[in-house]
Image 1: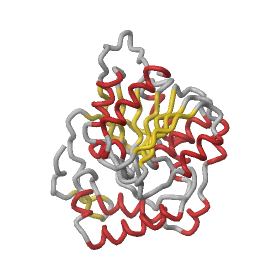
Image 2: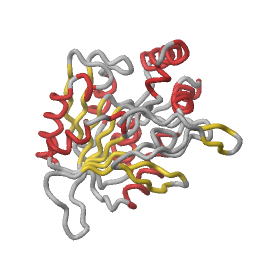
Image 3: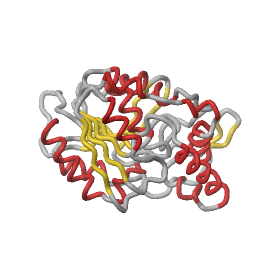
Length: 282
């Protein structure tokens, strides 16, 4: 969607980028914050104000609506289902992060923000498509709410691995020494706030004990896990734990020549898998 405007806006004594207008998005107030939301139509029109199954996209820790690029639209076209994409608080064009993220930030998103957002959008039984942190949020939500038709999980985390911490520490160095901040500024109102909000909590000593395996036995809906074999943030131990402990059926798609973002590294394989999964379970 292009770079954000470079003008400034004074807010509470601090200088922030203004909230630019993104074509095709709208705002929804959730948990006291304004979130940017995008709705993408499916092949079949919706009638009577009742929404059929929709794909709800939950982005990674540094993701946003624009960071997904055209993947949600391609998934909507491949499945025929409409899609909802949103930027979490502190990401994209949603409200700026005003406080450090707590260890429970993914729990808070899954148990407070996501249920309220889905209710306001009149979505009752979605298919959640989550990437990385977004996949973990999807798992927590599905472990509490028995209204999910299915989960598509791209590179999920259910516990913290040494590899994750190592790569996130390397990302810190890249942010400080390369043009990573400039790249992130294309997708976030305040790239530094977004980056440090994610990086600081993942590298916090208290976060090493973060674990969501307790939610897995409560999940009864079908799950598709897509894992890149060269993922720099997680290993096959993550999908294997989901398969071993989940209360519902789990399918794993292992992708060679694929790192953390399978929908960018292997988009055709991922879209084909999602379309097949949704055709059976949607």
